[in-house]
Length: 339
Ligand code: FES
Ligand SMILES: [Fe+2]
Image 1: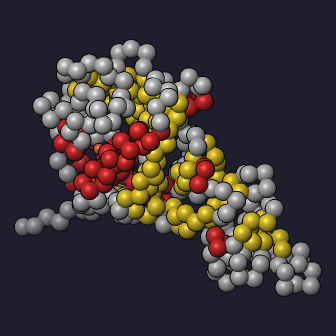
Image 2 (image 1 turned 135 degrees about the vertical axis):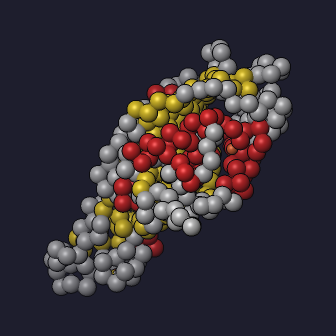
Image 3 (image 1 turned 45 degrees about the horizontal axis):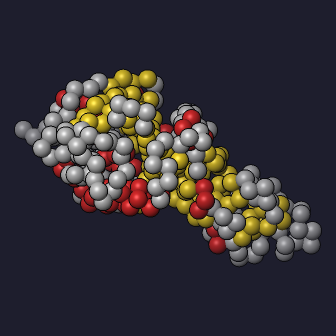
């Protein structure tokens, strides 16, 4: 007798609306409106005359034109088709075809979403956000330099991209000589604690000796070097990773993935370090471009496209403790459920 398995839990887009998501690097949003896609919705981002970022549904209420094709007039965005103007709260305040253009019917408005500029990103929550963004004091500390890489647009769900970023078992295989040493593939023991929507885990693990092509890490040991990694995974799709090598030198990776729709995501990675301050940004950016391209090929091949959040859907071993706890926490927080 064949027993039908129920479909596995998947990211719940309705619940994910009330989380902050990155939608652009802040410097990509100039005085020209920018179209972005989040959780299957098209949004227009724009800055008012004070530079404050706003996010509206990218759909004029009049005839459904994309507002992102329009332009900003002072504190309003103007639709390209008939020139209606909208404020940051989505209310239309100007209809030029009317005798009195300011006499706007109350129905003339578009949905407005909460936008926030922080850590060099524009963040949007489609409903009131339930979690705070992580604290990253290094990013405003003058002793640390910050480099941004990407963004990395992949044909996969954001859950797959996040899980890949934090999966240490793959380092020697997908990134030999860059992030891992194929001669030392064993994942040391570690444990994960779940604190609400934040997973924490530390690991000291083998790494490849420093690479002449990409001298990005502060590891001076040539023989069997190790890296200390302290992770915080903030559900649903943000990771804060602090790296050290036993001395004062440190690196902070901040990774966040934008859930564009069910099988598209965009990864943003910013990296702070307190050493090699004069090194050109391009060294680290080329390194990340290489790593993310190696990962993309693997992750885009994964099926199903979205992480199945029930443990029975895949095979997990002890060293997969992050993946196991990520699935558990996403379900507990109501961010993943059976369709
Ligand atoms: S469609 Fe936007 S003003 Fe007419
Ligand atoms: Fe990787």
